[in-house]
Length: 440
Image 1 (cartoon, one colour):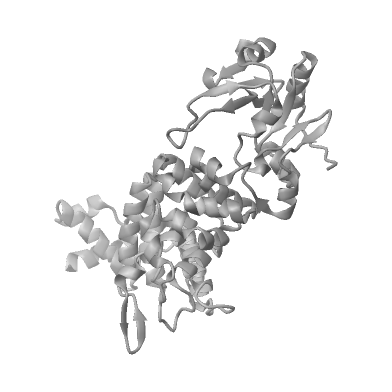
Image 2: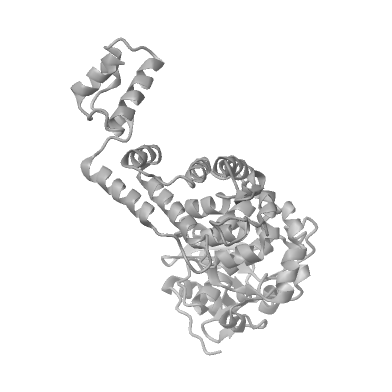
């Protein structure tokens, strides 16, 4: 196909240095794939028949960082640009299901491309000659197809992380795995137990923020269940509820896709109903899931701990999952939640309620009235600087201590005063609060 790739001047100069010294040089991988899809690349990889020593010799040691001699990658920072330059290579067996036992340098770009995971990542570009695409990756991109290079079973046996990478490419780019590739992803999902939890969590986060995440969650719950076994009971679980048209997993998948592209919100939606099968009861009125929000929050905390999420995301997601069933009915409710969450997480909380609302029935959604009202009250809080935390009160701890309160009594007294202010019993006035506390 006729294609001219836009290349930063500095990267183009690096390729020219290699070419002028008798070496092949191709842009390869994500930068070519993204360019073909009209997405500006965020980094650039060059593959060449120059050895790492020759690369360093051409560009100078002061401009080069060697990323492991065995893998032949040199990061070059020169000409106001940065690129990773890697020697053509082939790989031996993958005894551990993750890393090649041996890497050999090659002299042909075709050998280098043959070891790559998917056809869309096995496209090379030389600005002098254009695309080199032996596996027809450009055609697959145009058709929206994800296809393994060569035999899919072998590709995923070599490195099971490629299964999650494929799911991420599906979620991000809408590249649907073709049947043989998809079958191998399912068949070899168990090998993901060989992958470090950090890499699994990174890929999960990457796919959750993709525009096509709902399709991915529908197609691959068994793969995700390898590391999050709590997912499996949700798949196909009928809710028998007048509030839902969908199974638990279908509802979850829809809520993730119906939420904004905020990783904390999307992780919340992935886990918000994870305990429903554990809490299910059925009677003449239908299915019930009493206490599932609190139980889901407990499971979310355990899951994110297992996946080694950072502590802030774990805390935020757990709190939002716990709150997802509660819609504020009055101003004081919003003040309490806002005080607990803060501005950023309150915005996320509204997004959680909205995604849940949008994902219960096929082709329709319940009214947004209660959520609109909560947002209006939030705006009133901000406009009028209403007290939502102890810090917002017109008195301080030392003044409460002067009334005779001691130790923990001080914080309890301040919380009591805040509750009275938020419930409209007293105004947030210095003297009124002190009088209230004296009567307590």
